[in-house]
Length: 257
Image (cartoon, rainbow, N blue to C red; front, side, top):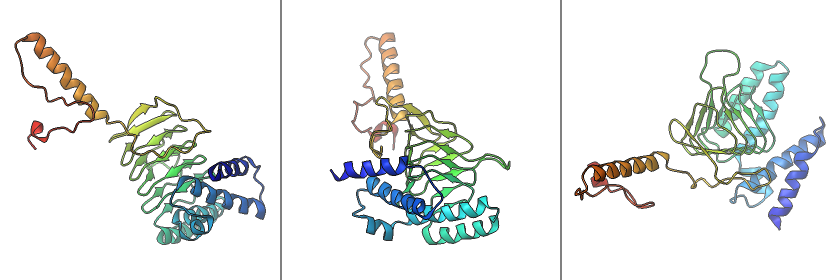
């Protein structure tokens, strides 16, 4: 029941038309706190979130530095952003565009570059980098769609697009655009289409343990194919395959380690 009420509150706040007044600012702050409570089971209440979440402070600080940046007070904005970085461990460039409902969990080591664009209700974990790969002054950082989850230590590099409802696995390195409703794993990141698409009405997709082993599966399939070919060439061959059954650990002796 509590989650249902919280979700209804988030929907109402998200759909409300923004106005440039004190009430709209307070409403946005309330929405940010509710977003954290929805996505972090460790959050025991709004008061605790208000006092102990550096990601929240970094987002609120960015709203100030971004206002200064847009109003051509760029040096002040950069200096203030570095003060916020020193206090929270989170570096958000004042020029970055951030949608409502961003949740930066833990936060230490997060870097968001100048031309990054982040959609609504995005979740970032510690060590995430939204970085640039060009010396050009134009767009050089990622664009992140709505309801995207980026796991701890993941790097999204360059002016790439991560589609809505996608999940980037921990420590993945994304260097090319990701279609919506995808899961990305590995270095460089491999795009996997979801078998069960995530919808905007679903709860946030925070199941980091649900990541396919692309390399392992491919290797097992390749070895199984080699065994099949060898048996066709020599029916008397009784050599034991090193291909294990699904969910059975690889034997280190097979690889001389």
